[in-house]
Length: 79
Image (tube, rainbow, N blue to C red; front, side, top):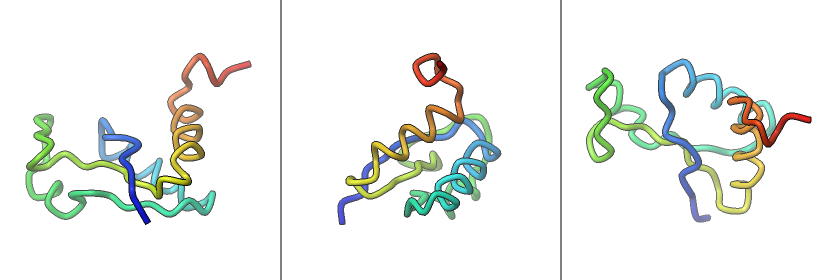
């Protein structure tokens, strides 16, 4: 199973909310750098050091991106 990154969240709140939403929809996910990211919190996110990313199976990426889009309220998801 190949995992693809669908989002690097802007905050801990966004990360937790989206993980909860994915879990509620039955979309498997993995948070890259979840443990390491909490060791070096703060506004400076360095991808190779502490930036976390939500990763999902490649075949569920479209579903996850639609959910993220709805959460963020993008114009393309509104009627």
